[in-house]
Image (cartoon, rainbow, N blue to C red; front, side, top):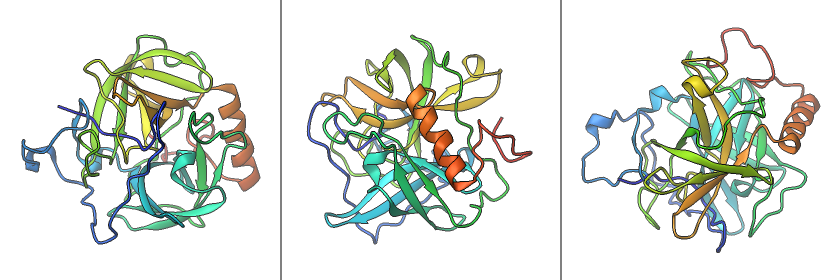
Length: 271
């Protein structure tokens, strides 16, 4: 089985998955309806979109074509993705069964681009509140102690399900372990665990249960950024890193918006 997430290599050429606009996704396919012959997200499995309503497919168009990534809604008007998924100060379409929303995105001011993709994070603002059909927005981690080395984390995305494969219209998930943290990144093991694959870029990595702030909760601890060229591991942008946290707080203050994890939004944020 395999898990699919991402659109950049940590030590090789940066690649976006180019998509055909005619291929429309199905967001809430229960796992039992997916044939066993479909490859699983590099060491992961299909999950119903209804369990992750704030996780969306994103599309952006540049001079090089139209590309697909994954994005996460973390507040009524706030979308989180990777900087390499969208040009700075450019628009991006966030798609779901609840409707499509066009948002405007800004990179971290120290995003390095290829080949290392340091500070690989973008925040996007919607002109109006984004509906999740009554569900809750995801909450981002603000605690520098999370996750610890060896902790199990969950990867999520709408990317490819086999190396160099096509992106699939189903949401896939899988778990892996933290190897170490540093340089604005959390380094995750491959070794039988989930690995990001093209199209999963910009999706979220989660701490769940006892390692999150309280039992039976989940928090976004990273943004899917890069993978090793041989699929031996993944790198996600560390949400709780000091420089990343400063960017988030400055951006939300600039736009006067609320972000789950930093702000109390009664009944709106996932536990």
